[in-house]
Length: 505
Ligand SMILES: [Fe+2]
Image 1 (tube, rainbow, N blue to C red):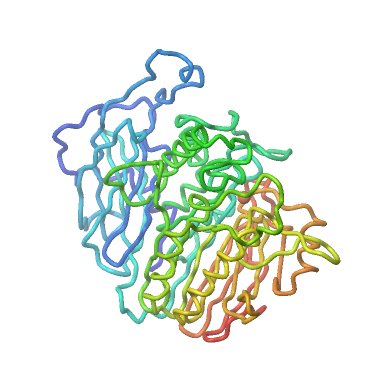
Image 2: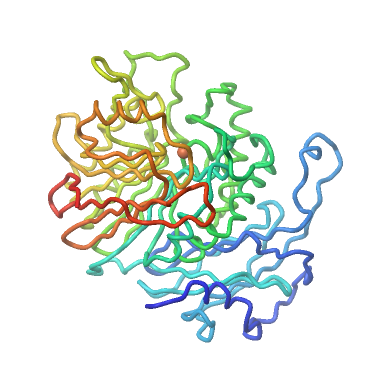
């Protein structure tokens, strides 16, 4: 279908007459646009999709001073938010509508799981609160289970440090023909990092709930990021910077006192939930937030997204080579779930999403080896178990996707016995600073299974699947520091059905 993004984003201002009458709308007037963080959708199935927004109020965010005073922070009452979903961007054919209540306890976020939709369809949605109308978002349901769908396109995104660049990559993404976006982590950064910033966080590293909320609100205020959310449904996993650099499980390198770190982690997880189009929680408990899952898209593909942060064994304080590989990245429960999930699927392409590079990566130039203690090399028995699950299930065409490294990598994934079992694509950073040049060059020299690498650009990737091949396009912006940057494909790969391994096109 041909569609003008600008047109449908603007059309939300029209036709308020079709809305149901709201019985108990409070706060019909707003000083500023309560939908200034935009709209989003996610977790598509063949029958359902999650719609998201968050109301914000001009003076609703408590200041840092409030955290240390006994004065109550500004409180806003629960608000009724009407939603509707239609077949057309003009909302002439509304298929469902309803009212959700946005509450202070969850930052007036709205998570609506709309069920009873038709598979493989575009839908348009919007929200209303009082007299305020949200922008219009577009979303798409998954193909039906068992459907012989022949084409599917998804974008891969990761690592979008707000200060280090503009989101031209998302502006470009929003205009493309895609079915889905998968975000592989580092949606926010807790710290500034680096120099030559194009914009500022304005505040230091968050540790309290309102501080994490403010950080998400800042990132989500970006119009290009909003456009990419409004154009497609998204799926997510997270990496470390959503909480704090290099944390693992219940410990962070800078805060090894578990109780205080766990409080901070729960605040970060809550703010993540409040800002992501993920399914509503029946009983919110942010001490333990399950985000891993398997998502089916007909017979062509399924996407298994793991959580590699919440359940991992923390890295030891000092390097302990003898113990390398004893640790778990996913935790026993998620590993068992992964094993079962692999055994149950039979899609032609098995996409496995995790936040970083699954393949081994020796960082030491010349003789000897050195590995990151934050990556899978530190958890290599966990990697072996993961790949064993994939092989045992005889999954056809496993494609591993990841982010984290601020460089694009295309790799042949080998099991512990050396067999080539999968193909891997790590997407570059949307904006975040590249690794040191010497370190990147050492990786390319020392690791022949990493068939391609590029740490000189920023952008995203597009994966186009058909029954006979997967194509992966790497798309870079002309200059991450230029708000008007253009974007273009600079490299393309193919993986052929039944033949693991990456091929340059
Ligand atoms: Fe990152």
